[in-house]
Length: 181
Image (cartoon, rainbow, N blue to C red; front, top):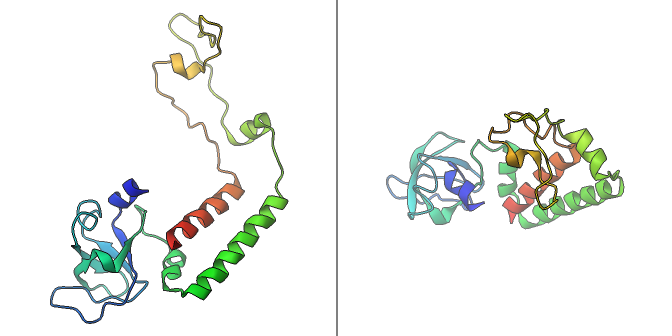
């Protein structure tokens, strides 16, 4: 997460900053702010950095203790940024709803064997051959090794065909919950 935060240009104000000195940015709690440079180059290594408030377009300097660096490279959705404006009771209610949703999904899950899961969500590998014609997947000691381990060519086709729907939702919930904490 720290590496992603260092490459991020987006932060959210964690408190209202209204009494500002000249050159500093006036912001409200929950405002999305775009940094002038990567957080790792500025805000995470210094006490302040230049930024622009997305809500009102104002520019100025911000202090690192007034904002939370978001672990994202792209601009976050408005729904996620709104969570920073919520009070403790609203966050606890949202968290309970998410936990209930996860519990409902756990009870309704259909379990797969590994073979069924792989056939549904992964692409079929292309036929592999080498200059000698055949690539064996058994080492001299008799252990099976993956075919790609002996191939000097890079993998040309993505192995993951699609992401399971329940993982998309669970990943989003996990990331949002992590960001709230």
